[in-house]
Image (tube, rainbow, N blue to C red; front, side, top):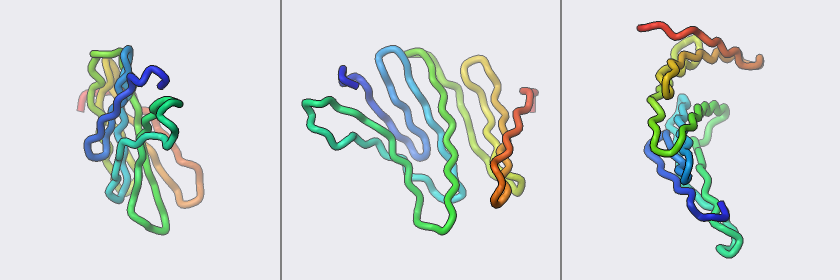
Length: 123
């Protein structure tokens, strides 16, 4: 970010990074409240200003933090993605630009996550 043109906005468990030609939107989820904060690397200002997003959860013996990112050209909409949790795992639904999104993440205690991509169909 040597040009110092990146800006960050946070709102609950979502954030947006804006650049002159594009933007990046993030939506985070957890079974515990997620705190998203805009921060800046602790460097001398002469080195540049480098913003970043920090996500934190309350202390616990087990953490799960999910974040979905979308990118779009400057001025173009991102659509809306929402997370939901049920007994089988987490589901991400919504749209981004012209695409419908429906992803399911199933977690076993020690096994790798299983991600299921489902074709978009009207609900």
